[in-house]
Length: 414
Image (tube, rainbow, N blue to C red; front, side, top):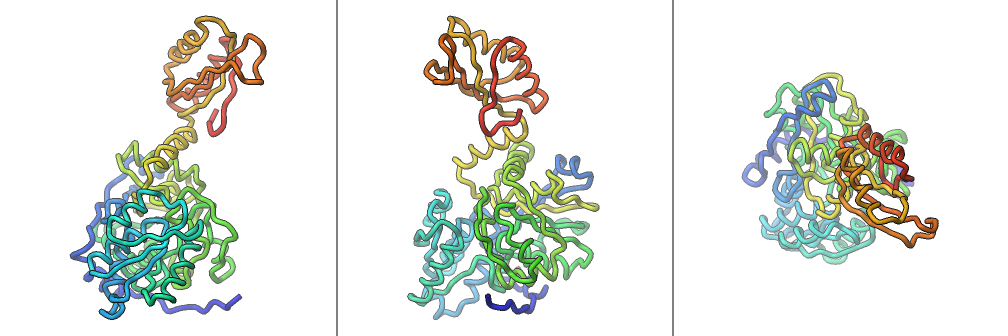
């Protein structure tokens, strides 16, 4: 294994130069207060809405900074990138604005809306492997054979400088902020944020959040050098990175105060809170900072705390599944199997029992053919919305008291 060599870090001047470059291109995204999170954490919490950025995430900041600094000769050769979606869209948008052609390698199974958006911005899309790491390897090969310039999603100084402009906006919008919490994949965003925030406010805390199924930073920090995970499994495709970047790792090791992890269930619950309480759509990676605050994975010492919503590019089909999963995790969505006698009126009676408990039936499947059933029995599978765990428990008890045999189906909370 090659020995990792510490690297020079970026400076505030690098990030400020990127801000000047980006001024006519990116949106200054809103910073909004979150009363629900403030009530949970006991300190003021603000949300930095990079999900409202051009192309749906902060990624255009770094991509445009990098591509704009290429020489005319380099731009003429075109650019290539690898991404599960957000970096792809950022590169495609930036390349179009700067008049260079872009090729983007995406893993098989990348969300279709992200693929379509990338093509819509003018990039050519190729598929490679099943992970961002596989796509990145293909992008390196493409660059070597065609001469296209690789626009790395996180491991380049220009990319980090561009992402750091998020922190400049945060401290302009909320000068009293004590902590910035953000999702972490390869580490480009948190590196740029830490450079700018720590230079302007040395006392501010910078906290990173990784999905537990893609948590490469804790093991890397413990080892003192970037380490590659054997596997990577999370619903948060935007931060599903198996190995930290070398340059981001140097910044995280020096400047970041803490890295915490959250489960996929935490991400889905956070996404649901943002949707219900803030009317804000984010992708699972974009909800990571909020998940850390909701679950107590990170407990703020004081406030105001700023949570970065890093992206909002979510497949509608995934959104439907995540919402259902989030409701189930919160004890507000039950899937039940109820056995009863096969007599006329039994289904109507069962539905009346549920209605009397003021629960809402979403769907019903009535079966007589299951080998688990005795002669004269039927099984009714129901999806039911409730008001929370206590209401779910009361509903199940009421059905059992009424003589029904009730079983919970998978992915529910009793």
